[in-house]
Length: 309
Image 1 (cartoon, helix red, strand yellow):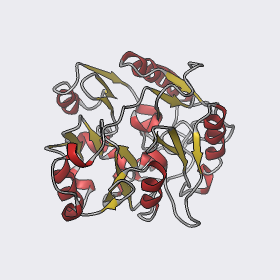
Image 2 (tube, helix red, strand yellow):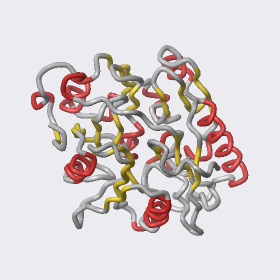
Image 3 (cartoon, one colour):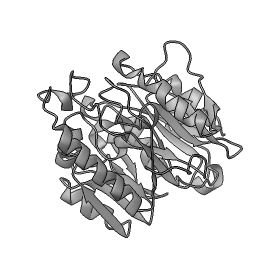
Image 4 (cartoon, helix red, strand yellow):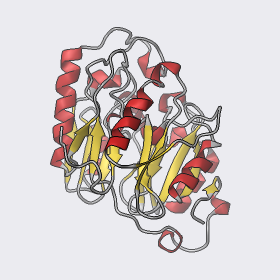
């Protein structure tokens, strides 16, 4: 069923996940963008309201540097794409592209089409980085369809299977493009709470069988689909999910995790699944509605590994 989009639990193949979803290696590094131009100049999501012009850029740079160190601590070397002047949201490197491996195992990147015109200038800069580092680059979204990269597509740990969100920033029709580009099975989820405008803010797989889920962010069909694939659904604390974007963490199953320090109950949950939970302060970026997961893009294999930050 690779290359297929599934929207309901009743459409899932028979048998356990290990039978119908092929194994795949996980990410080996991350791509990041320094916050040189970072600011909050308009309101694109509820988290940005009240934060216009409130960013402390020096503090943001310090927090970003410590985040990069945290990624390296859990085994994710960081590579850097140069920021563009006037691209205040470019630091959120998860959104401009979707990375993964295709059906032949090639590192592949699908270019995004961003909902807000102010962010569309970021995409060519990321495209140039991936072309320079010999990735397979795909520009295949039909006119009028939107996809905000890894912000709305979360890979299932260890499996050639993607979870894809739609409703606020990405369109449901774009999920078929994800399935075709990567030759993967895509499980489509409707997002229902504007505070959790990207899938990466409300779904955080902990390992192949368990996921941290902001249950308020999904409709009944989405929760049923999540429960049919994951053996264990761990509800994310609602207060921490909203105030600290607790589900916007990065988890390397069995190895380590990075999460904002404002989510102590969720930190305790992560400590049951990984050996090393690294806490960071992403307070300046929370003003814009992003945290750990939003501030990086996954890199796979050894392509583009030559030049660290």
